[in-house]
Image (cartoon, rainbow, N blue to C red; front, side, top):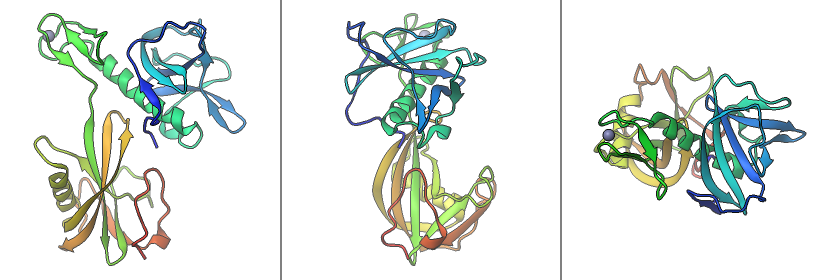
Length: 267
Ligand SMILES: [Zn+2]
């Protein structure tokens, strides 16, 4: 999962310990610098910035994981990777990069994106400054503060008679279906967002909502909150622009990836 490890210690300022090797999370255009290994990929580790030919446009201390400082850095989008290394998207690194490192990388990418996109104040247009006492950017001109963004998204596994409802947005590859998901609108509760999304996308009503789990989703700054629900009423019908197909599936027809929802009550 793309979620921070429980034992990750977030921080704003690194300890004064220059000899401790640093875990570097280096991004270019949203892609992470990795080195292929015999059984996956590895990240650069070095006590100081290890790439003399790569010019960083921003650096952020993230915190520490298992005693190792973690730093994020961004280089220009068109920067070629060092010999023997590649820039790859986090999605492509699923199951190839250590799960804990992948979680920290998701955290790093969100902070890099936030820092890049909040260089100027959204209220008055003046340049902002990074705060030293909290994860925020501050406008000296008008006092406005900008914190890392999180956009909540609900996802819901709807079940009817032991079958799971899956749907396909037009951007999905043929044959690939997902549980329903959508952004929470301003002013909504999570439950209201589920009822609205399900009605909009597949024209049915659901009941018995139950919280299941949550997961970070750094594409670019979402928090996925997953529920389960039962079909209540309505005729299943794909909602057009957002959903082009929706069907009930038995578990034998489904292979799962990413966040796995419970299937013990399915047939
Ligand atoms: Zn301002």
